[in-house]
Image 1: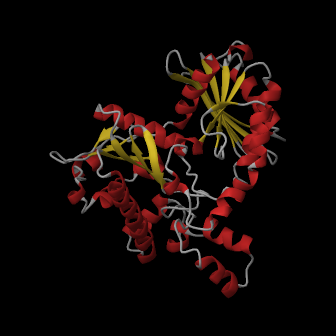
Image 2: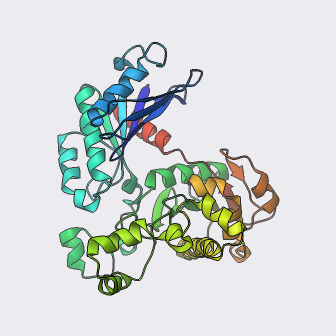
Length: 397
């Protein structure tokens, strides 16, 4: 079965084509700068990479271009579009109704349109991407895989905020959690490595956007992101958890609007805000190594907050069997992994620092110190494969 996975952004459309029978990627690429001055990149194993400017006025034009590349005699891997069995769409927010990966029809799309106010950044492009794909490929199954669905089983006391309950009833203000597809994938891999599907696992998805999730028996029990992806640990440009009274204080002191305050904590904070250098952890790390105090402080704040959440989840789960690092920072920043795991031996977390520094990037690595009670893994995430897997299951029904 061949599954096309689509991840539509406001001005982009990323894609991967999977052959699920052989478990491999046939092609992948990205249509960028949609509606501006389009650019497309396309890669197929064993063929020359393709990169070119392109006329991309909208997502419909982008998906048509993707299909033409996939079926191109020189660049493609398909004889025709009819070889695609189903399309899987990454959707950040499924609200309270779409609690599992679902076949997308008119009813589901209408519901997603009603919750755009909960997901104003990612919702509209995901809907536009689906509609474009459905128009171009009307006769095949389209599946939505939601980042929030992994958290559909967490207990009410873990997702209800201690504000007037009527605000949840009326406006659905609650903890939703994000990055769920990534956490589900790496937690599943960790359980396989442990040989224990009932394991207690903490997964740290650390990148420009970061979140930490606690999983027990294959189900999430808590997560650091909340009503929006703003909550939790500091990120590239997001502050993470913040005393809510800071926002009205800044509005008064700076004479700014609520929208401007939101932009400040969402786009100008985190590593960028503290370091004053960059939102990229690599740049901040380089400056820190060269003695820059604010860069050093930014990284210490990040490590401090990650450690706090790990400790709280150990308490919440009454133990832990494995700690997992994934995503751009988690998979590649060896020093940050070491710093997070320092002075956590009381919890049973100890890593082999030498192997942590030398293990190959892009591969699963067991960096546990010999004799440690808790396993520590580096597991590259693969959200696209998870989306393809869910799509395959639903397309067969």
